[in-house]
Length: 428
Image (tube, rainbow, N blue to C red):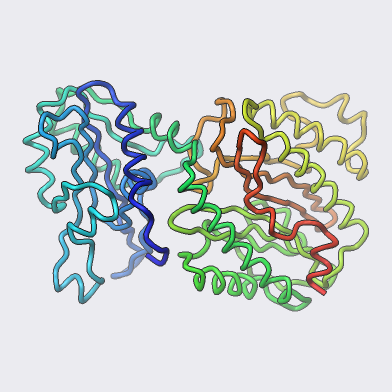
């Protein structure tokens, strides 16, 4: 890991909150992700299971967490299983956590080796009535391969078929939606690193620069500030490519007169940030480009103000749609007749603004959470309206990360240049 060690108090508190939600005499299990192969003897970089990290802070493979709050023996209430390190592993891969380090990281006193899991659970599991197993229940998940978690769940269910089983995911979604002050600090750090990367670009972007050169500037700045890198696949889309929502080729030349849409952000300590900005390649927006930019900016500011305690995301999205309608009419992209005669299930504004305005942010860029739950203090959302006009080779999206507080929305990216005039000034 590149990030500085995280205080184990975060993970101790997270486990305590999770344990308090379990039914009586329940045992819960969480397992780490696989290291995924590429080709030949290659492998992808390891990315930890977000729920396991949330509960332990352990950032390596072959890890299992057992939580059994009602265990008679105190040492069995929490057990962490980690991969046993060795001189050979240290030489080829780098040493893994030893037991003392695993305790220091997680705050769990009972640490055992991963290969002892079957033996130890066998002595515990029959005292429990219920087993909680975890799974990826994100509504937008798209999984074509069997994950370590899927494989682990099948093994446990087959070995202990007469137990009652419950899902951990609903509990995790509820808990992870509310960020503690420790988590907000980590997200803020990711935002701060993102700011450094963005400011680096303001002096770099000019006609003739390639999109992948911009990507290189960002990864340099991110990694040198202790980030693993991008929190998600970077979108560096100049000209008409900005109208492709998930454009990731990043292989075109940035041409004089075009605008670049940059959806790029750093992670830090596994926590994500999520930024979108738009830059004129030559350092100066045309009047039309600035008009569209400022229309999106007005919607963004009004939408941000609505991210308040007690609001509901479905109602919020409808309100943002109404704001966008007015801007699109003023820009000459829609008429009032089109709005009057629109299909309520497919509003006219969707032609130019086809995605939602906000999503949860945290350990995952599209973090877990219930969109039908009223907004509460501690939730973190993106705010990212956009207008996309393919016929003009112009796409504008602006995005910041907003912490919901009792005092109102707290913009975690408020120091990152946003106003069109400020961006032009800094680029020149």
